[in-house]
Length: 364
Image (cartoon, rainbow, N blue to C red):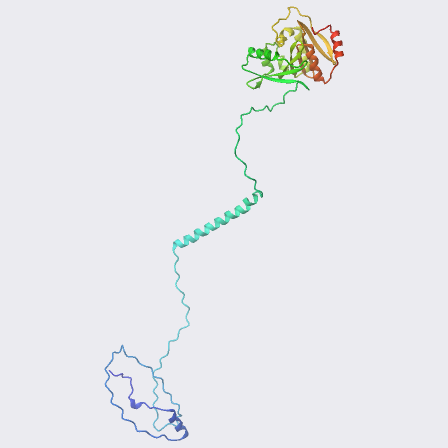
């Protein structure tokens, strides 16, 4: 089917630049006879879907209207196809894509971990690292050497000092049992051990490692004291041996609490039975005579001493109170040594000879 908008070919005028110039200069062009147009070959109709219309450019006449031929040209203006003009609209943004939930949770968890780690690091930096010692000590060996258990030391009072420079020797006897027989047997055995002449050997008596008290010593040796007598004395005491030519002579020293009371106690004890009550101190199997003389006194280095002969060779009961100490000795020679040590004074042999003569050989 032919296009209804197509124009007959005879209506189309062909213009050339040469013709236009001739018209302007006044030269008339030669008219050419039109050639017979060939018979158009019939065209097989094509479907409208395959048709393609080529837009024809408009033909604009550049010849002024005064110079045109008698037959005016026909200006055919094809329909102008206006190109679509893009409207200055807003830029279209891509649609927001929703982030999956697990990614959000992962990001939150990572942020929490970073915050916690930074907090821990800051705490370590400020509070721990600054307190660490700058020098590192070498590791100490943790190997421990087993040690035997030690007895707890007393924290109440210091031990009483009964001597100054004495004793010359010290021996500790730990009793197998706290009985009179065990104590007397141990003391007699130690008395048989020979020592240097005129020396003092202190005997420390314990039971299961614990020292005997004054009251326990009196009870085990069968020494009788007046009622409430020992309450004026400390629990500590000193027992020693004085070695002389005729054998060993015991010495007992007690620590007085009230010295004036002790003097009155001794005066009263003399009137009762002091000799018989204290006689077990001699550790002798002999017995006292039924009748005994009264106590007598002598001065040694200005210190009064009370003494009593007990009908034993080179033995006598002596006692003295000096510097809150009550001293019992089984011989006068032993008292001389103890008082010299406590007073810090010494005497000559001539002094002892004169003293011996003045007291009518009291050492016998």
